Image 1 (cartoon, protein in one colour):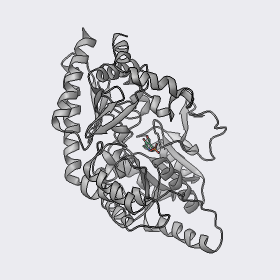
Image 2 (image 1 turned 90 degrees about the vertical axis):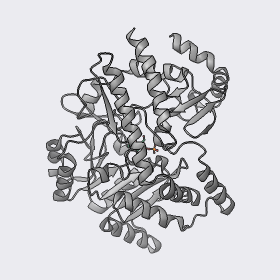
Image 3 (image 1 turned 60 degrees about the vertical axis):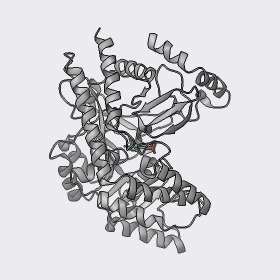
Image 4 (image 1 turned 30 degrees about the vertical axis):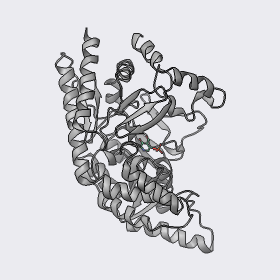
Length: 438
Ligand code: PLP
């Protein structure tokens, strides 16, 4: 409570804007996720630079939330600023293809191995299109998901399995009945996934190779290869969601675990924070999509894809430069090394106080697991979290100029961070644990 009060005292201008916002925006925020910082008032920001941002009261925060990897490049990167300016002078939205698309497709092919790509405005819309393509290509309706997943606010994925009978329950009001053939099983439970796929009603398995929205849950050695094999055997398309993991390691989970999916989806920070979504596919899937696009020129066929601002010139120009020049394999190696240092530091700090906890880790991603063993699925991951610990930590960090992860993911190293920033984070963690254990 002392920390909560101290935080409120630091942000009078934010408090005043919050009051004003309640008159024009439901809940006093332009979109719900901006209210996500539990217990404290919404922080209104002025600007960002490098790894830090500054609020309207002039407080600067070293950012380890990195916009849930949407601002993982860092703020106001000079090269990105230059590209945005140059593209603004040429037109940001032309509603016709621009050549930057070739460079982006090539960079994505290098990372994920898939030859053909399409563009949307967000990972949510990329997943929407990928599932629609999978249904069209297979003539089936079902989708198999894994507990603890998050793939965006699309109807098909806002369902969880609960209770002993794994009844499907909606994650939002306004969803009446689960879409036909939808199933949710535990991550790493290959036998359960195979049971669903054997019914041959499933169009797509949609999976993050590493679960990142309930802590970080790594796949067992045989899990992803087993899933790939079961998909091939049953004619199901394997869709890997790389929205988060693509920023943890170069080529994400697809490359790290050497999986060959039928489709890959992504978005968030690919264009340095300019809205973009991407989905890639094999030549076989692209043939199905492409023939439909060709048909659409003359007649109407039922595969609805696309959007007015999709593949706009600004997002493609930014993505080309970000992927080619800024998020290089060497830079990914550097952020993954710093992520490892951060995870090691977290583990050392908690263990030196006799707490038998672990640190989540996958490349540049880290986090807190309040258990002696790392989880293998979302149910186990849930046991290793404590909202009070997380929220108290965030307020303590904010009062000391560090913006800790807001989502269930842990602190994430971005491309603007240096080793000294990791040391700063760990220094504040040390003070926090000292107070917590006192
Ligand atoms: N996929 C994953 C794995 C995500 O974590 C998210 C968002 O957190 C999405 C998709 C949706 O991303 P967006 O909200 O940018 O559409």
